[in-house]
Image (cartoon, rainbow, N blue to C red; front, side):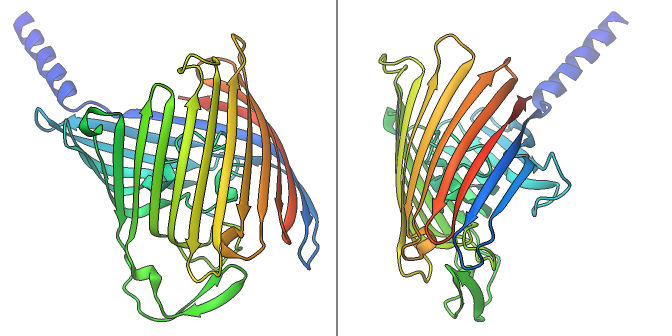
Length: 355
């Protein structure tokens, strides 16, 4: 009887090891946010609102399964969650990075599904307000794409150096050559170039060692047509490039707790007369042995979405208070000014819980 029980336990352990259960993870970042908008358009509709914002709240399942001694299957199913409402224009649950792939010990990883573009990922951690829906860099510059129908490749470190390469192609589902009326800048335009049928391409190269992070990214034919507000990243990026740099001054044995970041990008918006050019400077400081961290960020964009003289700036300040390993408090304020559109003041605060 003991032998049977022992054999059963060994068999069960073998099955569990061979097919490990997925890791369940996620976070809720819920903030209360006050926004005051001074409308600079002809409509002149000033507004002020107070609302709850779910920000980057999400739940996910990820795991891997050994196929051979050198190759394993990897997967991730991650969904954004609208904590404070049952719809946000994307639905209660909406797909974030969801993919199935193969990872090899020395050859790298291939993924297929929906995923952040390498261009987007090249920014690393320089956007210190990345997790806030209405304050992060995506509100002032294009390029923050999570693409559908993606096949992506990520290299291992190259030639023994801390350098990685990532490339992706987004396969088009549309083979329609018909003219299409699209919102470009402030004008609804009919075009016969049918850019929507083209595949999208994205690539990045990154160096990361001893507190120094350097990266470059390139996008081609990313984004999508949207008959919507030209301030909502509705642009179709013909091509764009960005350069990123970050310094962890603690790892460099200079100033413990201080990180600095910078980003510059130049984006050609399809059918727009001007390139959108943007730059960002950021800093974050962990205050000694206290639970506090403070952060600041400045963004400057000229010819937003390719519209001449539509320049935009953002000044943002924030603080984080670590309560325990899973829970953190947030405070933030931002001033976002867009020429001939609006001056916007945002003040918010809330809690983040990770699991």
